[in-house]
Length: 157
Image 1 (cartoon, rainbow, N blue to C red):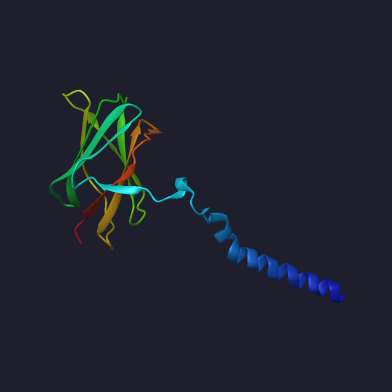
Image 2 (image 1 turned 30 degrees about the vertical axis):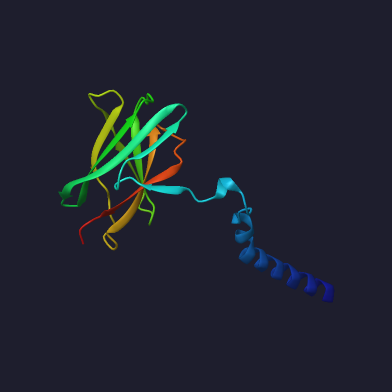
């Protein structure tokens, strides 16, 4: 009977220890693992972000072009010699999660120039947001950028 009580207490203590420490063990990174290093940021609204990937050049810039009732109007321009079929920029909250918002870019008159005008969503409690732009060709994520494309946007209180 005593052994049974000790076994039950040990089991309960073990389960509690795993519940508290388990998530830390499962999500901890190996030190020195370069794939887990934080990715550098490029503030796309402060100037063009440029890189080369798979033999193609990319240049992304974002400009404020005014305000709308719900926030700042922004113009996104992507210039590339890659040949995406349908270019999308997916907005994802970097400072807080507010969902994902696809922004479809239109191919311009100039070869390789894609543009879109949009208003970034904002939180009514904290209207200043940092957003990340992830480029996609249709539903396929474009990889190869050496940094995250980020920008800050404000909404009205």
